[in-house]
Image (cartoon, rainbow, N blue to C red; front, side, top):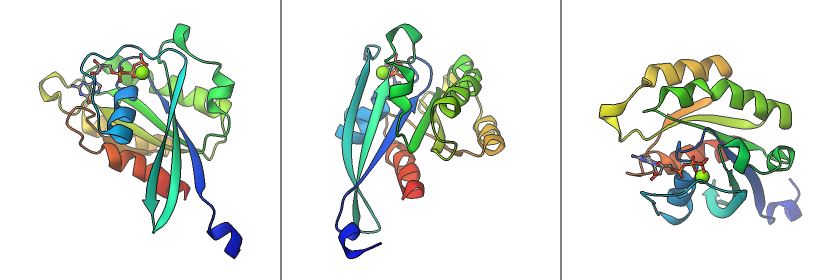
Length: 173
Ligand code: GTP
Ligand code: MG
C-alpha cells in the first residue's frame, strides 16, 4: 500500500442472510449496540448499520446489511448483495428447518455476489440448549463441506457474537 492508502478507512459491506426469525437483526443489534429485543418484529425492507472495528491497529468500518428472511418483506435481491465482501449465513439451532434452508441461501449468495465473498455459517440461539435440533457437529460438517467458517452464537447471552463478525472482517482484511 502507498502511504496515502494507509491513512484511508476501510469500508466493508457485510450481509446477513438466513430464514425468518433465526435472529439476524438481534445479532446485529447485539454487535452494534449491545442490545437485545426479546419480541422483535420481522425486518421489512433493508436496514444497515456501520460499526467501527479495530483489526491490527487499523480502523475498519463494517457496514452490515440486514433484510427479511421472508420473501415478501425482502428488498431487491441484487441490490442487497451488490458489493458485499462478507456474509453471515444464519440458522437457528433450535429449528432444523432453518438449517435445511442453508443450501438455498448459499445458492442465492453465489448467484448474486462474488464467489470470494468471505462467509461464516452461524448457528444462532446456542442458549436454547434444551430445544436444540441441530448438533454442533452437523453445523461444522456442513461448513467444512462448503468451505465456510463456522460458529455457534447467542444474541441473547452475547456468546460469540463479536467473534463471528470479527472472523469475517479479519479474513476480508
Ligand atoms: P426476519 O427479520 O424476519 O428475517 O427475522 P430475524 O432473523 O431478523 O430474527 P430476529 O432477530 O427478529 O429474532 C427473531 C426472534 O428470535 C426474536 O423473538 C428474538 O428475540 C429471538 N432471538 C434472536 N436471537 C436469539 C438468541 O440468540 N437466543 C434466543 N433465545 N432468542 C433469540
Ligand atoms: Mg430481521
